[in-house]
Length: 402
Image 1: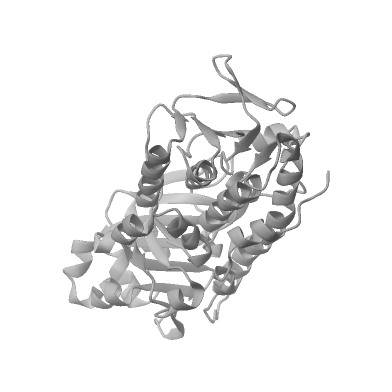
Image 2: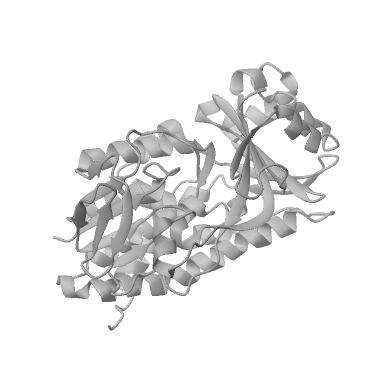
């Protein structure tokens, strides 16, 4: 059986795309060795949207129960005017699962990671910690580790994030992320703090789980409960202040977050007054220049996830696209009758995944532009992308001829 080696670099630490791909390939009968740079597991991130295009894949993996336990089903989105909180638009998703065939989850990234990691271990993914990849050999294919060990496979899948070593090696040059000029403040407010204030009741109503988004005047900010109300997740996007140049993630005092939005809707200001003093991070927001190819010469090593199509968080599809990648590549590999078909399979993967991911990435840029106008109207351009079944498409798409 073909095996898949999946190198990773910090700060990804067995990222979601990496784990989804490994699980999907093992479930198709392949032997998978996962190579992880760090010596032990750790978590990054906060709230995350998993829409139906991605959640259907996780449900098919048997993860419905654990994700229902840690996630919350999105019921509504409400867009508000930045200064006075007037409602600009409202979308109801009460029957979304019936229409789309899979749930809309809002989860903590760490919880999704833990669920996937437990699944990967249970199905037999061979995870090697402390295995730093320093070189790729596209002919064999193989990777060379820091200690000189050569790890060979039939296919190498590189999911090492938007600061990808694999991508730079493939291009023959350092390929730095493309700054949007914006950054995101991210913070978690304890749910108990929110519930202690009657003015915050509408924001902590998990029976009607709602993403509230304030838009306009060159920025946007959104909030929603996660971990069954343990925290209120708050994320803003605005012109970068400290997260510039080589600074990708910078701890900031909560007063900086407050200062930026002090003239906004009083209800929003009330939320921000509850920010913890510590734990607020400013993240530099980047994507990557679109690539014409995700394949190393010989088409036996492929980039997936953020390494190939990093996108802005305003698409709400960064995780979704990587999850789709993992499911798609497993379905295509399952169609192989011999190892000689691997180049054709990976070219097929690229040919149908590249246009979709480029379109979705562009939607994120369009959302941000729309939401940052002085008189923003709210709404998104991405909801239609949720009604998509990548596994069916991967099973039916004609195979490339090599």
